Amino acid sequence: MFDFADKTVLVTGGGAGIGRATVDAFGRAGASVVVVEIDADRAESTRVALKSAGVESLIVIGDVTDAGVVADLAAQIEARFSGLDILVNNVGDFLMLAKPFETLSDDEIERLYATNLRQVFSVTKAMIPLLRRNGAGSSIVSVSSIEGYRGIPNCAVYAACKAALTGFTKSLALELGPVGIRINLIAPETTDTPQVPVSLMIPPEYRDNVKRWTPLGRFGTGEDMAGGILFLASPHAAWVTGTTLHVDGGALAAAGWYRDANDVWTNMPVTTGNGLNL
Image (cartoon, rainbow, N blue to C red):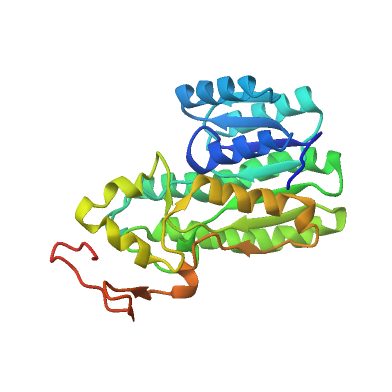
């Protein structure tokens, strides 16, 4: 369905979860893949897997919140591939500091901002010259979140950063549209990944309820998100820019509605008394 032969793709945080699923999907579609990953073991696992699959790759170990790492990454891509066709801004983390806003220190707020928004600015700015070099048809896809479109308790700064990505994407799409570079987002709902093993976090006696919590009846997978990313980066979306693809099983449309144990739609959750929605 997707053909990215002769294309070079950069995926930030490409060693696990949504990032790794995206790396694997682009590799299967014929792309050369650049991965920047903070965890050395994940980086090595990704390198081995791509080599085994015959995918040309460049694996860089580093933290994209570090300006020096980003500059070196751009230099390595230029030296190895001359230019870049697709940038996937995947890095983000809502679990790193999940607590009431008033309890966050200034340093913690800065960490959340650096991880969930500032690095998107710095990586994107560094890669735009390489995208321009490869010309019209180049694309940027960033990973936002459903939490940028609704509230989430104890993650106010994270949600603010994800909401800001929408304005950034719309505005940059206008700036770069005239040179044929498209800018889009995906906004996932809860996705079952090694970083957020949500299926394992649900007590066994409540797992039957998962099928009623979203309209499509399950948590998302890394592959679901990769499919949205590849679509937006592909010629199938050649006239799509400045927009968000909600890959969320219908959760945003449901807006708090779910099916109860009798399959009746309700917006009145039942709890165990310890805060666990049943």
